[in-house]
Image 1 (tube, one colour):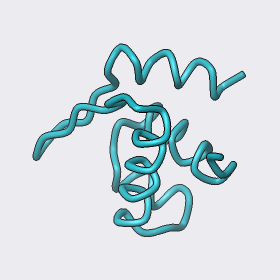
Image 2: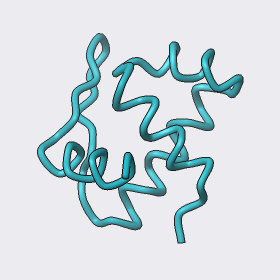
Image 3: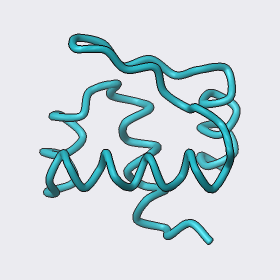
Length: 71
């Protein structure tokens, strides 16, 4: 089961598309957010974000999960 705090992190990251801003907003470490997003992706069985050195984007699956979590 996915923890509520992970869902909050996911929604915030989906809205900011920035790990640093998400970590600052939620007063947590970027590494913790990365771990929690990986747990959600593993639990769901889909890649939810596309990450490179400069950008973070939602995948199509990530958008569906975002909309579900927002409800």
